[in-house]
Image (tube, rainbow, N blue to C red):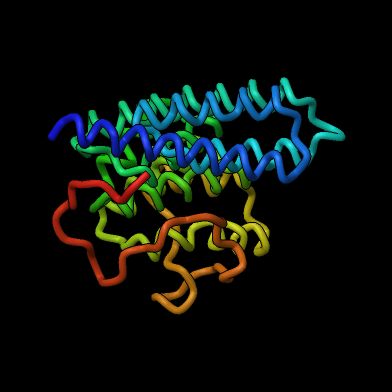
Length: 239
């Protein structure tokens, strides 16, 4: 049985390698660059890390080859691989076993935006489930990209989940902040209100808020509907 599983795993890795190689070669990438990319992807597969973020970095980097040298793309991929490893460790530490790929990928993104291990762990543990954790991490990353203080971004998401807010509501936080800024509020004032326990207002159409749908961060996993998620779901959403 174990030998069959090992063969299936090996065939999956080989298929992934072939797919990455085909995509890059079709775009005119040189063989040495393709070899380095496929090696990183193979290592990620063997470590049970999500490979989509790495493949996206490779394709994005090669598309910018006129401005970004190939060795820089490899360095960025290697750094991302390290953050994904940390994200997987944190998800395991929070009791998500096996760690969902979406949570690991979102954790890697958050770490790349300047969040630390404690920040990531706080959001995962506050979330009502793995899908909500991935959404919360992505939203916190988006908030920091908007210029909100890191601690305030983490506190906003964590407090929202602990207070029973749904992932769909949390998903609106970037647009809520955009609306507050449009009304003349400064980021420092928004951060201060969050850190003092005031949180962020409800999104438009849900009790009075500030945001427009256009402020949502891209690439966020689907949110869980309903007034409040129940018990935390343990399990994997796939790599």
